Length: 135
Image (cartoon, rainbow, N blue to C red; front, side, top):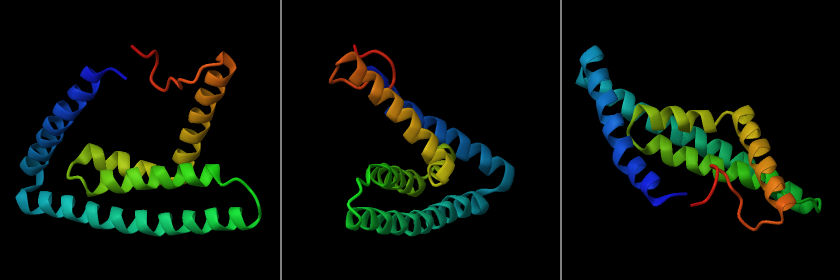
């Protein structure tokens, strides 16, 4: 991934998030805006914790039965990312975080990542191109 893309995301996302929070403030007021930020953080963290524990039990079960827990490990990583997004103030990060807590969404991402990995293996490449070509 190009460094300028990462830099733009780290500068642009907070600006967009702030804009959306100010717009929400105009619609519902500061008290409700702050309540939304706090509640989504608390609810999201609780959901991520519950789902994370479920995934941990699934990983332990797979290992006890001699199966590779790769799908559950990916789920765990996505739940961890979801938790980080949900405790970050902002409406877009909350939406992405809650989406990552939906099992069918995680399954779709796993399928997409697997296809990218299989394509890299078929090319004989050690670079997995997730977002297009490396520069």
